[in-house]
Amino acid sequence: MKILFYIPAMIGGGAERVTAILCNEFVKLGHTVLVATNPAKGSYPLEEEVEILNIYGGRYKKLPWGLRQLYVWRTARKFVRKEKPDVAVAVMPPFYLLARMATWGTGVHFVASDHTSFGPNDLMRFNFIRHHLYGFADVLTILTQMDYRLLGNKYPNKVVMYNPLTFDVLSEKKLRKKTITAMGRLDVWQVKGFDLLIEAWALIASKHPDWTLQIAGTGSYESLEKLKKMAIDKGVSDSVHFLGFISDVQRALQETSIFVLSSRIEGFPMSLMEAMSQGCACVSFNIRGVVSEIISNGKDGIIIPDGDIQSMASSLDNLMDNETLRKELSSEALISIKRFDASSVAKQWISLFDKLRK
Image (cartoon, rainbow, N blue to C red; front, side):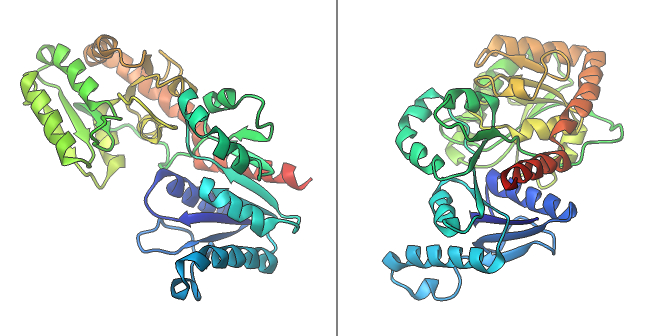
C-alpha cells in the first residue's frame, strides 16, 4: 500500500512526533510512505525508506505571499497525480482543505487526523470551522472516546485512533530512587498543574524526608520563579527539585519510583503513557475522563478527581509508604500499556486504510 501524508512540518510537537512514529512503523510493515511537508532541520527521525516531498520547494519563496498558497495547493495535487497513493492522510486542520483539493476526483481516499482533544466549550467555539473541515474527509480520526462522545452524531465518519508509545516497553527490572517525577512545559497558565502538585507535596513532605519531588521541563521563566517561590513559602524548597530540560527522558523514568500527572488540561497524555511503559507507579488527575482511557484505577495506576489536592496527597503518601503496591502497579502498567505499542497502533491504521479501499 502507498500512503501519502500531508503535514506542515515534522518538527516540534506531539502530532509531528506521532506522525514520524507511524511512518516508520508503516515502512516496517512493508508499505510505501511519502510525506509532503517542509523538510526542516531538526525534524523527527524517519526511516530511510520514507520519502520526503518538499511541498514548499521550487518557486515557493520567490512568489508574492498571496500566490504561495495557490502554489502549495498545485504542488500537493501534483504529488497525488504522480505518486498515485492509495490513501492520503492530512495531519492537523490547516491541511485538511489542502488534502481534499489534492485528492478531489482522483479516487484517492482522504483521512483527516485530528490531534486536538477538546471540551464542550472548545467544541462550541470551533464548531463552525471544524464542521466544514471535518466534512472534507472520508474518515476523521480523533484522539479519545471522550471526544467521540462530545462530537455526537454530527460526524458519522469519525474513528478513535490512540497515539502510539514513543518508547519500547521496559523488559527488565530497574533500581529505582525514592523520587516522584512530573514532566511538562512550564507556562504562566499552569496548564500542567505543578502548583497543585507542590500544594499536595507540602501536605506530606515532612513525613517522607528521604523522598524528593522533581519537576522536569522548560518554558516560562516567570512560571518557574513563581513555582520556586511557592515551594519556599510552603517550606518544601529543599525537597522540590526543578530539573529543567532533560535529554534522556526514558532513563529518568526508569530511575523514578512514582510518576504524577497533575495537569488541568491534556489531549492524550503521552508523558503518562511513557511513564507507564517504563514501569513507574502512576498517579494522575482524571482530566475530564481522558486518563480513564489509559489507566484502570487501582490496577495499573491511581486516578484521582480533577484538582483534588487532598486526594493527590493521600495517594502519593500511600504509595511512598507501600513498596508492594508500587511494584504491583508497575507490573500491571507494563502489561496494560502494550496495547498502545507503536506496532499495534500502526496495524490498526492499516486496517482502517484497508476498509477504505474496499
